[in-house]
Image (cartoon, rainbow, N blue to C red; front, side, top):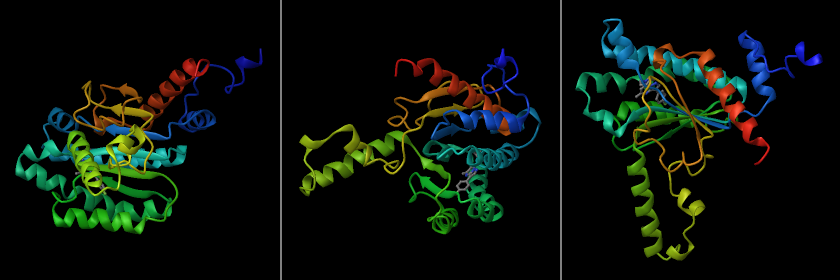
Length: 259
Ligand code: V07
């Protein structure tokens, strides 16, 4: 009978944001959440705006979700900001996208430092414009000792290229006699990936109704729970993120008995 009035014991979801956050925090939080932030162009098109307007709006959502993930106690938030395929887009769009890290950090870095967030990046640094890389590296440097949320940007990232790079570096270490191919295990191979220092994602979110991985963290997502939504990334908000986490916790509960 207590269950009816005790929100902690009932199955009823609280409707306000604060209570939902408290209830989620009381259960298992996914340590690592990865997000494919899709639908920015489509969001703009629906409003007869240029695609870059969608990207800009999408950037504000990264801030919002970073704040919430940090408050919830998520350990790592990986966001797919730019893929190695994205260079094929029109030059004006690429140029705009490559300025977003500077704009994002120009206004948000002080808050990230204040909130103990550590900025990380995975992807091919070589291929980035110097001004973009400078901004990201400054943020990584200024937050390197922070111990809270790791905000990991996948920037100029492609998973197959990451895996090939790992194979090459492993072969080089074999040739140098540092390791032997006989010793190769999943854990050792993982240590050659760009995510070597991170745990594998527990939850993958992809927005905008596309049900595919698009060359994102292929190795790391082997055991990850997937959550897809039709919501376009610029429309994605705290409610949607909490919905994903609540469903994740529901799945954990169901399998909890036999794990
Ligand atoms: C980008 C906004 C989010 C939606 C997806 C595409 C557009 C934040 C960053 C960023 C990257 C590195 C960094 C700080 C911020 C970003 C790009 C695109 C290229 F250190 N949003 N965002 N970078 N979009």
